[in-house]
Length: 310
Image (cartoon, rainbow, N blue to C red; front, side, top):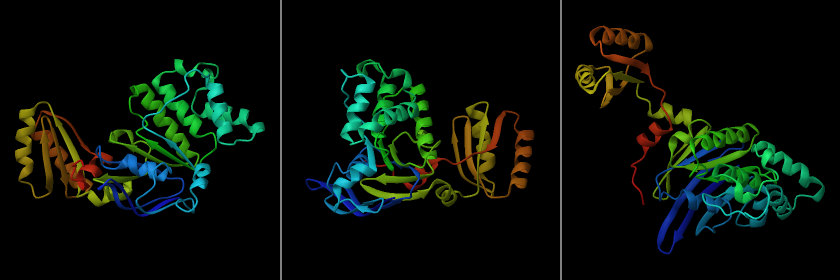
């Protein structure tokens, strides 16, 4: 659905994006992650047709964007990290205005507006002034506006920025629902926990380069070295004492202790892990919890990146 080849963007003599080759499949919800200055916003703006690449190729839904830039507007929707709204309009007036701008046929505008309001849970705000909406509702309104022309691809740049925790949960549920509907979504964020619940794949950027990309489950399998285990102790001293015991075991690697928490990789099967569990609980009474930890997007990022900004 989204393919780029050697995509590069310079600002003056400095490359913001350099030699990016990527592929996002149809219906995929993909997280675009990396530190500030990694080139995420520049990449999204090029995919949205708002920035012209210095060199390289972009193809979206089989359309080569450089050759047919106007066709992109019917295919893709872009939600920037900052946005302006016509605050003097009501929600209905705002959406009807943009429906006409997207050339939605007049006889379909009312139904299309009702549809995006239902999807973004804004039905009760139909007659409300845009200026009276909370930050979270404004974000949902911008997404509703972007969905009016039923784009196949949705590009979201830091969509949870500035939202309170409840609004973040609502946004997460909306993205998950759009994914279930088959919309191809590329969403950027530097808050990795936001992406874990709804992304099936990630693209990791640093200094304008894509350093790793793929399905999360496959990337986790690549970085896994044994079974990831976490032990939580009652206090830091108990954790330090147990860390010394574990450090001499041949079946324990990647041992890290942080205050009262110990993380390590266990190089054995689950039967042997259960045996280790019993031994530790019997010999160390200050064990609070012992469990096999699920590796996450954060683990992938920490494993493959240098974590340097441009």
